[in-house]
Image (tube, rainbow, N blue to C red; front, side, top):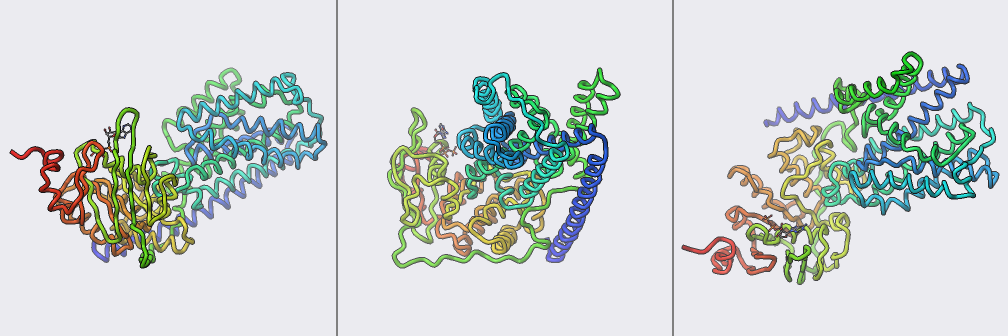
Length: 587
Ligand code: ATP
């Protein structure tokens, strides 16, 4: 690409950004106007209209709550109703037994729901996918059984709630909760924290390797997503004047909420609002005009829409360029950027990396058997060995993905053997993956700013990200979705994310696999430049020996998890033991 073409591409990107910015302002203005109009209709209409409007706001609130943990963060929950029930009971007990004013009790219920999620999160969020969904379903059922047998809370007979609230106050409370839900979702859609959450949705393994504190992020997302149904539960209970375990922990509430978000657009800011509002209105119309076919028609509308438009209503808008999520932390125009500040070596500097007597076992198999390795500043070491020799396991153990059963890992003298993966990444231990693990639904910019932002204030993170994009040749496509990049660019992105961590040591796992000779030369040139970018030491795993023989100062050979040789590439490649184990017997 010529300089002129590059300038053109950047100018087009800036124009697109300005257009998107204007459309966002228009969307918010239209949303506010619609909300005011609906409030006017609700407050001046009949009692039925007010009740129905309150029900819609409750549905929107629940949908926004679910979207935080399941839409943005990717932990599909079938049991958010647990928090709804906890909130309903907490409010009722606080008002009935402690005489607390209801609005105060609702706030306490919301906080209690969030607190329950903070306690449960570290346990429940160890599960992923369908296991988490079923775990949450199980939690709701357990709570239902507990409340069915808890006399203080009315057991299976439930609690009668005296009419303490006016319909208008319930409506106003629910409107505030729906607004809180919108603001929390807006925070996720626009902030660095939201980007961390979305990266877990995309690829949690890659995210922690890029320094994302996964447990903290998902537990906070879970707590925020619990706050909304818990507070809403308190309000709905007092709106119904009666509360029992089967209605408080009703699984259909979760099912409806999930359908609302699927219909509106999962993991989007506007999806829960559109989905809940439109489907509540559709269901109401079917109920009035076609009461016998209501459920069937409702199901048909949902299935047809989701099949035709997997992105839901927001997906349809997106197709025409509206309501697209802004690219997080992206400037209007890509700046030239600044390289990271190099840390000057200290006189008494410990080795960059020391691995001592590392042993890793997978059930019966010893994948690493007493491997030791040390790297000083300025060194590049290549690790070679036949398939299954333990090279990737060595990377995974040093990076923190696999706990060793014996041995020690020190980084600049600091013992990091038990440090979580994300902390090692933040300290400057960066790794690439054998098969590129870009986050396809995030933009190229977001893939790179994700590791670049840790420990930096915003402007420095932006400058650093821009620099990485220029250096790695990804600047022209910085606003594109990573999933749309061709395979060559995917590898460049993998490399860019390593640079974005401003690492002290880079572990590159078969970065040249499957490349043509020309492509390999580009990568080899980039690896040679790593010290220039502040990288103190490089570890390469490679099968293409010729590609690394002249890059590495030393070669380490693994065979069945054992280190069988370590020397200069020239000597290692002449070592008869290596020739036998890896290169094959000489004829
Ligand atoms: P390749 O060049 O094919 O990538 P490698 O040298 O990187 O191979 P590893 O992937 O580290 O080798 O595997 C070393 C041994 O450990 C192999 O026998 C592999 O089957 C085994 N292994 C690796 N990961 C696991 C795991 N999670 N569970 C059980 N065994 C594993």
